[in-house]
Image (cartoon, rainbow, N blue to C red; front, top):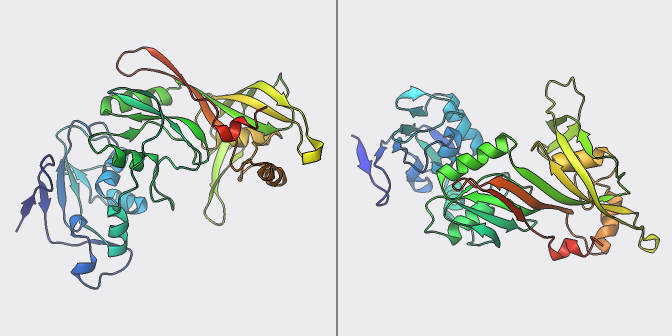
Amino acid sequence: MVVWTKLHENQPLINSSAQVKHIIEGKPADDRSLNAATAAVRLIEVDDDSAGQRLDNFLIRHLKGVPKTHVYRIIRSGEVRINKGRVSAETRVSTGDIVRIPPVRISEKVAEKAERPAPARDFPSLLEDEHLIAIDKPAGVAVHGGSGVSFGVIEQLRQARPQSRFLELVHRLDRETSGILLVAKKRSALTHLQDQFRERETGKTYLALVQGTWPANHKVIDLPLHKYLQADGERRVRVTTADDPDGMRSVTLVRVRSTLAPQPLLGLPAMSLLEVTIKTGRTHQIRVHLSSQGHPIAGDDKYGDFDLNRRLQKQGLKRMFLHAWRLQFTHPASGERVELRAELPEELARFAG
């Protein structure tokens, strides 16, 4: 027997069956320990707001609590279908598509975690209209949940704005980086803005405090970067050679804003406050490029000078000194060129001289 259910008023009809195929985190003792919402075949019609989204992202939104590795596994196995045809993770969904999601059961522990809402939190905004929000993200907050982080900016923002039907990250910032972060309020705005980032039509400039005196004539770093995993599974990036098949060309522009004199009594060397513009958006690009030149970012716990970091902590610098200061882009609706600036937060401004 096939049962059609409607979970809430505006949701498309969902086809349910009793067959169980996937169990996440252990074998069930009985049905009471399982989440029934994901333990049935679902046929979901794609609406206008979801149109244009990658299939993997579409599934992650509908399979809350299911690990991403498992989402990719059911795509590769062919159990996820669009209009009855096999698809890949990169496939874009269109309005009216019928997406088949196979039965996936998750343990009570995982279900409780998925259903536990992130604490509602709004963030200071630099610009907001019906198409987008530009927020000033504080350091220490991930932009989204995952990899040991239960929630981030986007989950908290959705809880704080339950009336908003669509809120999606346009781009990302590292957890310890503060500054400008764009969130789209419409699918059309998301696509338009992400296209600009992909085609390098945006201007992204950061402020970074680095060890040593940066040479004023050293304005371009054009070195390929290679991502790899350490033995403990943590992601790292290093500068590589031009002939590395896994190397990604990465270009960083540097301008010296000011130089700070050494403070021998505090054990601090000369330091430089830099305006850093990235022409490519590679993982940890600024951090690795600056460190590779002998000028690591103050407070960087991955690529920095750990001894210097300890001395800076004693003076009150408790985080990495990297701030997304300026962002230039074309507004997705008006076509006007927009320039936003987020000044240094107090915990960094006091070290900037």
